[in-house]
Length: 74
Image (cartoon, rainbow, N blue to C red; front, side):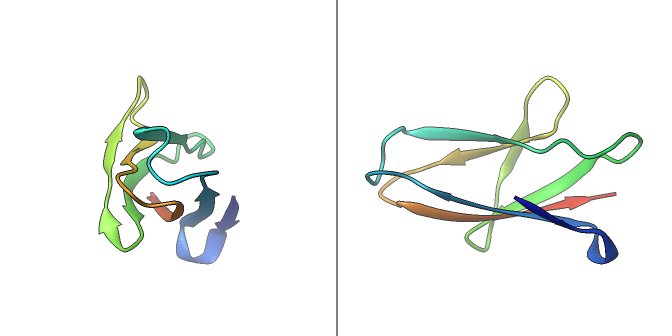
């Protein structure tokens, strides 16, 4: 995971040992207060945001093995 301060983006890559296991991933972003996670994209598609603090990208894995995640913080 890496932060790009000038663009307000956090970038992460996740690779599973085998496609589809587990069925769902929760990737937690921890932006410094008072920043918050506004949105996330997974492999170029919008991701669902959740978790107790709305700082987690919820990813359905399907048959995919590698996930490139970009979170936008504001």
